[in-house]
Amino acid sequence: MRTETKCIHEGWKPSEGEPRQLPVYQSTTFKYDTSDTMGQLFDLEREGYFYTRLQNPTNDAVAAKIAALEGGVAAMLTSSGQAANFFAIFNICEAGDHFIASSAIYGGTYNLFGVTMKKLGIECTFVDQDLPEEELDKYFKPNTKAVFGETVTNPTVTIFDFEKFSRLAHKHGVPLIVDNTFATPVNCRPFEWGADIVTHSTTKYMDGQGVSVGGCIVDSGNFDWMAHADKFPGLTTPDESYHGITYAERFGKAAYITKATAQLMRDFGAIQSPQNAFYLNLGLETLHVRMERHCSNALAVAKFLESHEKVAWVHYAGLENDKYHDLAKKYMPNGTCGVLAFGVKGGREKSIKFMDSLNFASIATHVADAKTCLLHPASHTHRQLTETQLKEAGINPDLIRLSVGIENVEDILEDLKQALDRI
Ligand SMILES: *Cc1c(COP(=O)(O)O)cnc(C)c1O
Image (cartoon, rainbow, N blue to C red; front, side):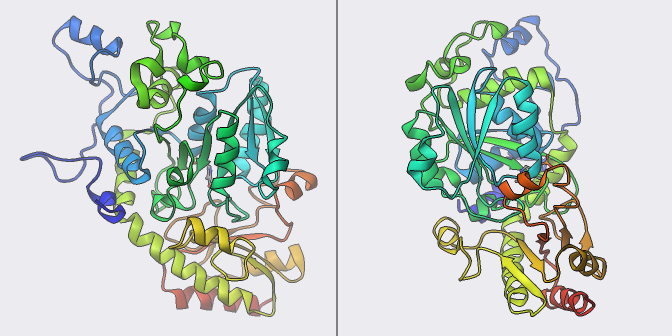
C-alpha cells in the first residue's frame, strides 16, 4: 500500500462481520478464565491484553498504523508529545549518561532535556544543527547515548540534515532519534534517511483538528543494540524488574518498544486514553489530504508575506531563496508543513498590533490543525527562556509563528492583508 492508502487501511483490519471503523475498547481490564493464562501474559510469554496501562486494542491498532506509515517495526502511543520524547530518551539513558540535541527544537522539549532531565542526572548538550560535521563530532563523549533532532523545527522551521546526523550518530555507535511532528510521515520518512527512532506529538497534524493531546514513539528496528551492548545495558542485560528478561535477545527488532512498554509505561503510566486514540485514528485517515492543502496554502501565504512591504522577513523552506530550501527539497520533495515564521517591520509592538487585528486567524498556543492560528513565541511559548537562550534557539524577539490552516487560501490572504494594512 502507498502512504495515502495506509492512512486509511493500516492498523485496524476487521475480519468478516466486524465493525469497519476502529472500535473504542473503553475497558481498563480484560477477562481470562484460568490463572495460568494470566500468568503467561505477565511473563510476556503469551500475547494478549490484561490492563490498559500496558496495552489496549484500540491504542495498538493506531500505533500499528503510525508504525506502518513511518516504515517502522513497532510503535507505542503516549499521553502527549512530551511523554513520547521523554520516554524515547529515558528508555536508553540513565543517570550519568549524556546525549546531544539540536538547540533549535521545540521549547517544551528544550526545557525537558535541559532542565528536568538534568535533575535525573542525564546531561544534554545542545548544538547548532547547521555546524559542519567535523565540528559536531567534537561534542560526542564516551557516555553519549543518543542524538536528537526535529525534521522541521518548531517554531523556527529550519530543516534537519538527516544524513549528516545519522553518519555522526552511527559512527559513535548511538541511535538517531527524530521528532517528525511537523512533517508527518506523509511528507518525510526519517527512517529512509538513517534515523533509528521517530517520535511524534500526535496533537498536531496527525490529530489535525485540535481535539486531543497525544504522542507516539516508533522504532525502525534498525539499530543493533547488541553490537553496542556495553552502551545500552537496559536492553542488553537482564531486567530484574521483569523476570530477568534481556529485551534485545528476547524481542530482537521489537526490543526498544517492548522495553518502553513493559518498563516505562508500567512505571510512569503516561498512556493515551482509548477514546483519544480513536480521535487520532480519524485524524490519520485524512492526514494525506490535509497535509497537501496545508502545504499549498502555506506556500501561497509565504509568497504573499515575502512580497509585502510591511514584512521584514519570512522563513519557509518552500520559498526558493530560503536558506533551507535545498535540504527541504531533498528530504521533503512534496512540501514540509503548513507552519512558517515571519517578522513584521517595527518589531514587537507592531507584531502585537498585527496579531490583534486579525479576524478569523486566531491567537492560540497551538499549531498544525485545520484552523489558521498564530503565536508570538517570545511572549508566549518561550517566555521562560532568557534572551541568550532565545538567541541560541534561533528565535528573534519579533518572530511570529503562523500555522496556516486549510481554509480557502484567498480568505487567509485577505485576513492577513487587512491586519497588515492596520499597522
Ligand atoms: C507540540 C510539540 C511537542 C510536544 O507535544 P505535546 O503533545 O504538546 O506534549 C513536541 N515536539 C514538537 C515538535 C511539537 O510541536
